[in-house]
Structures are given as C-alpha cells and as structure tokens.
Amino acid sequence: MLTTTASTTGRALLRLQSSARDCLGRRLASTAAAPPGVWTDSWRDGIVGTVGKTPLIRLQKASEVTGCNILAKAEYANCGGSVKDRAALFLIKDAEKKGLLKPGGTVVEGTAGNTGIGLAHICNAKGYKCVIYMPNTQSKEKIDMLRLLGAEVRPVPAVPFDNPENYNHQARRFAEATPNSVWTNQFDNTANRLAHYHTTGPEIWMQTNGKVDAFTCGTGTGGTLSGTGLFLKEKNPKIKVVLADPPGSVLFSWFKKDKLERTGDSSITEGIGQGRVTENLKGSKLDDAVHVPDSASVEWTYRLLHEEGIFVGASTGLNVAAAVEVAKSLPKGSTVVTILCDSGLRYQARLFNKEWLESKALYNAIPMAYRGSAL
Image: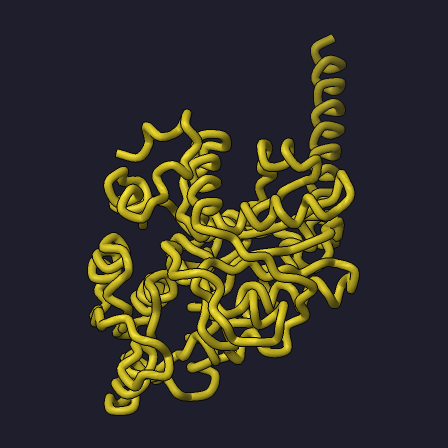
C-alpha cells in the first residue's frame, strides 16, 4: 500500500514539474517573441538606463471636460526629473561618438535649468565635469539643484539671442577656451530632436497602440515637439502636431503669419517660448499652433494638482491647456497626447506663492476652490 501511494505521489510530482517547465517555457518564448520596443527589462543599467520609458497617464478631468482622451507622458519620472533628460543623454552620446568629449572632459551648456540638471546627472554617472550658463531669471530651486549635483553654475543677465552676452554665446565661448570641453548646443544640435524621434515618439506610439490623433506641447529648443512629431507623422500622416506657445514668444506668429513677431508680453513659464526658429524646429511637420496665456497655464497647473493629484510646473500647465484646446477641435473620443515636463517642486517659491502670483496679476487665474495652495 505504501509503495503504491509513493508511486502515485511520485507520478503526480513529475506531472507538476513537467507542467511548471512547460509554463516557464511559454513565458520565455513569449518574452523572446515580444515585438521590438516592448519593455521586457526588469532592471536598468545605471542612471543612464533610467532615461525614457516613462508612464503615459490619462488625465481624467481634462478628458471629461473635452469628451476626448487626454494622455500625458510623465517625464518627471526620468532620472533627472524632466523631459530634458532625454536630450541631455543624446547630446552627450553625440559628443562622445564624434570624439569631441574624452574621459574626464567638461560638458558646457546654456540652459534655463532642466537640460542642465539632466546633463549634471549624466556627467556624474560618466565622470565628466559640468558647467552651466543660465539666465539669472530662473528659479532658485533649479540653481540650487544644479549646484547640489556638483555643476558649476554661472547665472548671467537675460538678454536676447542676438546679444553677444546671451547665455548660450557665453557657454560656447567658455567651451572653446577650455581644453577637452564641448558645448552641447541644445538649441541647434539636432541630436536633441533625435532623442525624441528615437524614444518619445516610439513610446507614445506603442503605449497608445497607434491610436493617437494629435500631439501638442510647448517648445524652447524645439526638440520634443519636432522629434516626437516627425516620428508620429511617419507612422500616420493624419496625426495633428500642434505647437503650444506662451506669451512673449514669436513661434505662434511664425506659424500663423510667417513672421517672427512676439505675441503678448513675457511669460512666467520657464524654458519654453522662443525668439527665433532653432535648427531643431526647422523641418518639423506642424499642422497648427495655439497661443496659451499665462492665466490658462496657471489654471491648469492648479487643476492638475487638485483634480489629478499631479504636482507640476507652469510649462506643463501650458501643455495641458493646449491639449484641451486641441481636443475641442477634434471629434469626441479622439486621443490627444502631451507632456508633463517636470515637478512643481522646481517652482514652489514662485508659482505656489500668493504674493508672487499677485505681483504678476495671476492669483485670480487659480480656480477659487484651489487658492489655498498658493501660500
């Protein structure tokens, strides 16, 4: 009796082991057969490996008010906390590939902050020094973060691009005068655009299963809008690519009237808007442009915080305001994708400060129920 029972138990164990092997085999075969671009990595190789593959979030309230699906890439999930990490990685890789940057070298950039933060993270990981020139109008939080990361920060007066003392020109001259240094030139180095052509665009296409009707975001260098748009247009020429522009920028007028004229006064948004057409923006396939006033950017920044639980800066508020505007021009049920650029922590002292907002005549742009967040 004992022999029979042991034999039966043995056969059952063998069947269980065989079933487990078959199950594991199917899982491995499924992983091996996964189409290109599907994320099968369970861990990533160093901080550089954490750039990209960010979540795509459906914004529930924005979708409700439009009758469309408003989706947003959570770019604050990148290693340096912003969409600019993608460009930073590709700019450094481009310099390495071209032999412009040797071990122990120095990366120099002119930036409103986020590209510099991305560069500083990646420079630390790769053993490079980092020098950042930036307008002295940028938030203290960004400057402090750059210094915390070990970057040498050189704030300079904010002057137009055609002024020799513009922060970009100062960055270029410093790199030219410093051995084993490279000016990554984020505005006109199209490695920036390629970062989004090769990563952001494909990710959006995959995450939506190709069901996307429009893409919109603000632009400073032009890399995100242009690179993402070019990829999506190649996949489906019917996808609308819409430029979102803040006050004080020339790009809305450039698209609408073919004139480099500023629309409105300066904006509280940082890192977006432009006084010229950059190399990254040239050749982009745009279908339309929308002008977004600061009041709309502030409104949606606070709505995202209170209605979605997402803490972001004003450039993201502008992006979502633009996405809502674009959605209103599309049939119900359409899908519009935009970018959640970075965290509101980088703007807390200004954007969430009642006194500062009142000085800009923007406190009343906050929905009444949410004004308690402006401290």
